[in-house]
Image 1: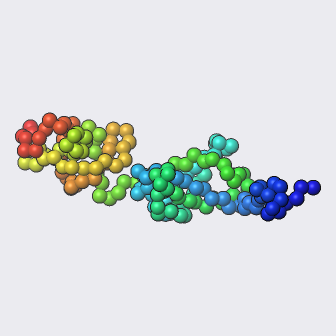
Image 2: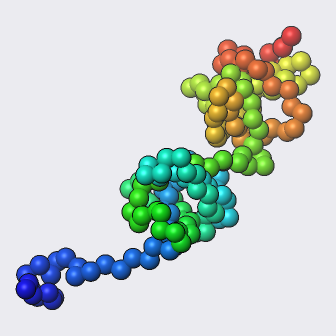
Image 3: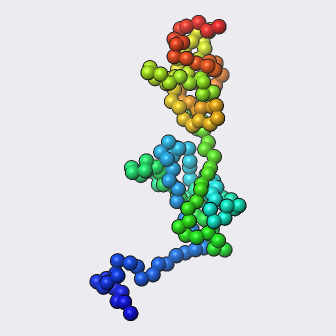
Length: 172
């Protein structure tokens, strides 16, 4: 018997909500640091707590192309087929994916990267002498780090670098 309408009591709440359950949208906030590693068409997997033994796999269909300034993340979306209705709208999902290194990066031991007051660098050995090469660090996993810089395939790097080693110093 309550009045429902734009000016009536209780009008701040919707009278009803429509939901399409057969196709849901998975919304992911990708931290800025990792946003350059994902592309439209990449596959992601997710789990939901209501079905812990199930793994779901979807393809990213949309990337926002901009960062949310509050969260410092990019919004990505995937369409999830849900014809049997097992997944519920609004469910929280744990999403995972494999991040692919870019083509112009190199994977080195973490001990090869020096982060000092003079900057971040690796030490390349050229004709028996040390040469500092400025780098930027990307992804890290286990004892390895992704680096970007003026490096070439086949360069010899010190595995255990130190900021005490200066450019031009002889390396045995």
